Image 1 (cartoon, rainbow, N blue to C red):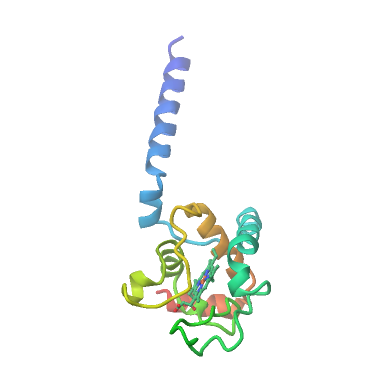
Image 2: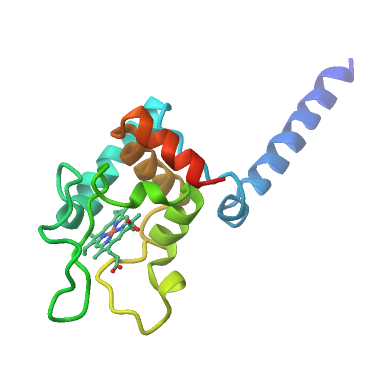
Length: 151
Ligand code: HEC
């Protein structure tokens, strides 16, 4: 029977192609949906949040006090990620790029900011997971508003 080994070969080709197409390069260009309904992603995201984001954005996503007023340094305090902030004004893709590459890719190289870029620190999956966690805390009307603004 040659059908079994050839099936196995076909399978390994399919898996290889899948793995190659799943590189971070491709992921960064497409499929930047942070799925807040995926419980394992949200769970991973909540760990990432506590470890990397809570120090500035707050344990309850509440942000720093007076977050709309720039500090003496010119930098803004960390905004909340809860509905009182404006994280939900941005599409998943923008939030992903902002977290991965930093605010300067949108605001320009001279912009003073304390928000780190997480490229090389967090994987694309971890970034999408932390965004999924943030979204999982939003009520349905905020999720709906984000969806509308993302179109
Ligand atoms: C050292 C403090 C600090 C840490 C740590 C930090 N941030 Fe931020 N973040 C900021 C600041 C400050 C801003 C405001 C951006 C600016 O300077 O204009 C910001 C802005 C953002 C925004 C844009 C929000 C908006 O309303 O436009 C997102 C999204 C974000 N951060 C996500 C994250 C995530 C996810 C993490 C953890 C992986 C993280 N941040 C960790 C300080 C921080």
